[in-house]
Length: 258
Ligand SMILES: [Zn+2]
Image 1: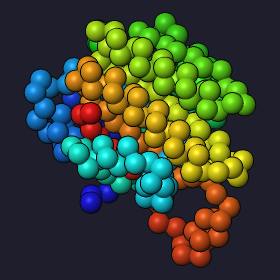
Image 2 (image 1 turned 180 degrees about the vertical axis):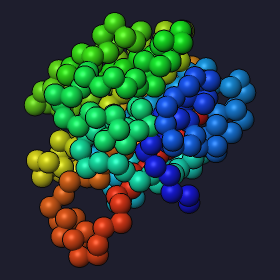
Image 3 (image 1 turned 60 degrees about the horizontal axis):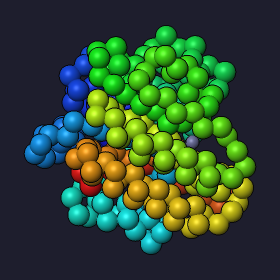
Image 4 (image 1 turned 90 degrees about the vertical axis):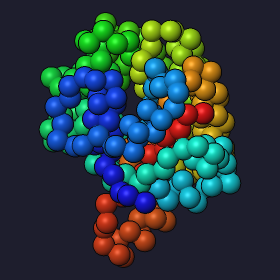
């Protein structure tokens, strides 16, 4: 399997939709070919970022993530992507711009909305192609009035409820016939990892949410992209990583026409 970078996602989307993006990362030809090989060619794409969903997590929790694995097996693509940051905000900035964190400058929550660099969502919207985001309220604020459909979900203790709302918004916006690209961000795995809770429970719920989103994408004959943002932060794993020095962490990128 070829190793990619998370920086290649935005250029791939830009190439598919025929808009210009300032990034040195190259589009992933296999994803474009995959999209074009489906008839009709998908008119809508959904990009779901699963927080802390790294490559090892994807394989370690294969039983709980049965549906996601099935999506790959049936008719899907699986890539391993090098990450660009250990933190959510800069990583998502990179996924949506194709630029490294030092180039887009969105490093903390306080930087959100201050960067002059446009995300692929805003670039598409400027070209008259409707986009959507279902994300946490702070991340959503700068997108108000910039893109077609913004769904802000307040952070909360009940992270399953949070993800349920993200899922619901993502499914509901797929009913909009003018939608071209939707982005959403599921957070249960990350929250469970930080709290030291049962990760298999978070994996199962995430898998269910993806299944529901995939069904809705399938009804629109759309294309679904799923990736992680950075490695999962676990105490036990840190020990392992310290011992054999640091290859960059990788996350899966899964592409399917469900
Ligand atoms: Zn994260």
